[in-house]
Image: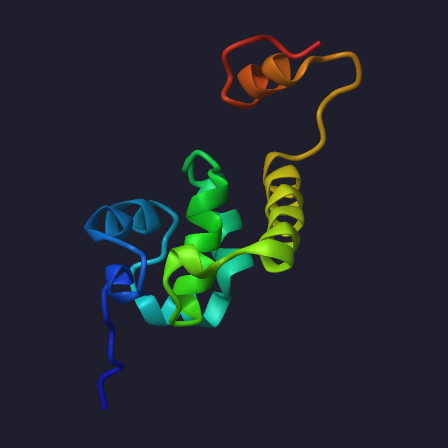
Length: 115
């Protein structure tokens, strides 16, 4: 029996452009995303080069729950912001002491020399 595979863009709130960005992270089906969950999926996207964006994160969370992206409000949105910030911090790793955020980001992509 073949495993069913639907595009990532079949998840509510995600459009056709999502298929390509998720594929860069090795995620080629909605089933994979559902199994991983929103947090692990978003961390994988960031590590694969997707620029972190809070609305993109909570749109994914809402979509996996079958809810419209703009349904996220109040305390739920505030809690998701905390989660998003943790995902971002973990995905980018600790910054070297004495380096600005810009220097750390440039170092991460290999633009400047390590100290």
